[in-house]
Structures are given as C-alpha cells and as structure tokens.
Image (cartoon, rainbow, N blue to C red; front, side, top):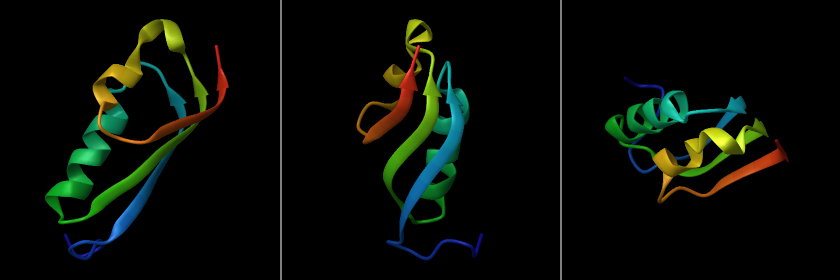
Amino acid sequence: MDGIKPGQRTLLLDDLLATGGTLQAGARLVELAGGVVAAIGVIIELTQLRGRGLLEGYDVFALLEY
C-alpha cells in the first residue's frame, strides 16, 4: 500500500456507526500501512448497538446519535 505514508495522520469518515466493524477494519488497514488514525467521524451513530466499544482508543465523534 502506498496511499498512506509512514506516520501520516488520517481521518476516517463514515456515514453510519452501527456495530463498529467497518471502521475498526478501516483503522487496522491505516495502521498496517504505517499511518496513524487521528480521529474517526460519523454522521449517525446508533448508540444501542454499542459500536463505539470496538473503537476504544480512538477519538470518535458523531453528528447525530440515535
């Protein structure tokens, strides 16, 4: 992977945080490429599904929480 340089800070953005699996996988890919996940942002978070629990250690923010 050459899209991310070692130490490069990245912002992961997604439309929805439900179970957290997709964003966790994305964060792992960034880190495997040598990057650093600076933050994770979503438009909507479905809080009852507790997806934020898979993203512990990351700065996560949501515009709307349901």
